[in-house]
Image (tube, rainbow, N blue to C red; front, side, top):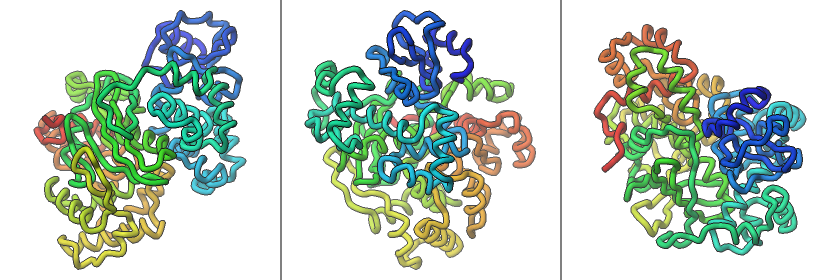
Length: 489
């Protein structure tokens, strides 16, 4: 979008928050860059320059605005609706791969050379992988500076910087303030915060309907790993350097996030996974406008706009749970998963509630005795085949997944039909166009609305909803009285 100058100027002049994260505005007369909704008086159009990323602004010599804090704007929806090389690279960079494995590690995961990766990122985003990772480190540093009393040296290494000098130079260059000045400007911590926890706000593009989003996560929560407590969805997180516990609470203009981490180096990864789980970088206006073109869907969209797709913080975990939930009730699926967690999960301490374990790894599940699984033999075969292939790397589920290839590999496994593959594509891989025409709830909703109810006819009708059929699924599911569609009391 940043190449459409006229459209960008209109968005800046109207302070349209819907475009935050789509592009950034740099002002040549002040040397700063802003989000489109910045509250200051808009600059003259001839003084505006538009960039596709904060990293590109920083590389061009601009510093972040102190008023609108563009580094905290929602992420671009492009990276969650596409499956090409650039989108997969951006998801991996958000997941901290460049900080942990360098650009060669990023390239190896994607199956391309480092030169190809750098060339494509530069062409589309105006910055290479190192610059994009640097911008992410700067944002993590700012969060730690403003929300924790940690010494600056600890913050530098926790944010991923190789040295304190690099940390100081980057913060000054990006924010035009020293780390000490940034901390002095931050609001004082509010009383009642949990000791050792980081409290932050996760922005999103309005509207956001929390009912099915948090309702689904709470209704399917695995005891010991997830829970709904005091108006918040809480769960354990398995992270690259350790583990964490997150509490996510819906607010009118943001998601309140409270993170407790065993290793602060996992901060950016934890935030990225929480945003992905709640689908916070979606563009609800574009999605709902497309779905409203169907006269039978339009009333559902108008009644409760802004539905998101409830996703996951761990793709392999969700695939295992999808198999456990085949042809059984939500309660039975939770019971099966809870038994696995108790027997094979890693214990964690939770001072606030009832979270006890991390979900078992694929390696731990691959080593269990199949006879100990209380399920039909055919599903037992499906389960053991899946966890073995996940443990061996034959099936890779993650932000770098190639969606068509992963679908094909899953379909080749015994017991994997279209429903299982599509629900994994929708909630684990993040494919916004995944569709479930054979799902019983979808067929019932279709029949009630006057849509075709047979899978083939419904799929043909749903072609007009592309590329947002996964969101249409949320609206169709919402016609039912199942607990997944309501915020817990």
